Length: 117
Image (cartoon, rainbow, N blue to C red; front, top):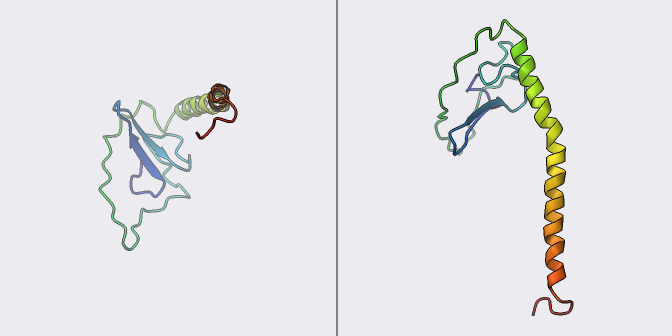
């Protein structure tokens, strides 16, 4: 991927996993390649008074055989993304319900009129 693109993002998690992606989701073969004719490519620029560290990302994983020739790789990555996107609203609803239950549960244990004393 083009690490000098404004929309390239790389994040390494404590367990060592690294995510390399396009913030605009325009790289169907991420983390290996951006489209060669990407219409949204913009070189990273530094503004006055900004201090930028060096971009240190782990090496890109080895490309699977047939990358760029076989559309099934991009289709598989799109299908995986769809699964995550379909599950997200349900997971968020479950988390919201848990938080509501926690907040309402504490109110039952504080006698009325004794709050703040």
